[in-house]
Length: 289
Image 1 (tube, one colour):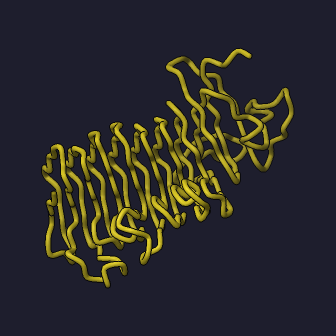
Image 2: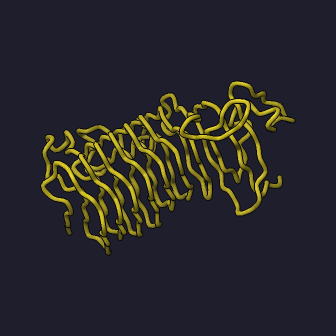
Image 3: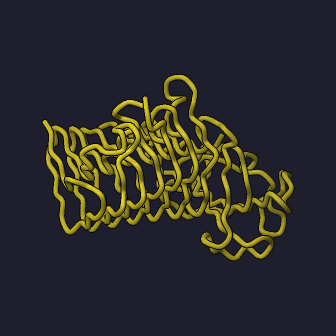
């Protein structure tokens, strides 16, 4: 079967599960999905006759764009949220190479299974390189790591997203348990312009374990519970123009650990420039190993 050179799916809907496929660098076709007014028919997918469900429309090489006004298809993701509701599934979104997910709310994931089924309730990536932009990853829970997002051996881009209200158990989850974002492997993720707020982790809000190089630029961490906000282990990090404000230690440390907000353990290298750190902490930057 021949594969399309590129597909952009414009969506207005709520669905339970999503697996996003790769997008080549080519001029895309346009397909439309409307959960309220659409019909799943072979001749559908047009603006006038949109499909009803995303699984019907989904093909390899897709960019998924949400945030459209019903019927008229004008786009404002902040005003018209397209919701991907996992309804208790282990992973709401499973990433794939060169996929793009833009303008969605990802919520309702509960990763309480065995193995990787306990990680990445909102977004789960294993050896893939998706881009998430202008999304809200909210109210997901993992019993293992990465309540909001978990990535292993992946090279992903996060730009302009909001991670809010994602959790792992605040006690008993282990040192690696991160409420919003957990990354391990040898690739190079980039996180720019994201907001991390009201996430709850055993020790960390954002956990990066290398080898690899991670770029944190222009992100804001505010009101999270975790003894560490950013943890970099056996890797290298470039941290510039981030704001780390008003975060607190988690219940795992009795509500009063060291308060270290940026931590490095056995780092290969790191640069910390022009960051703002404010809040109930005893130590702004810590080093171990």
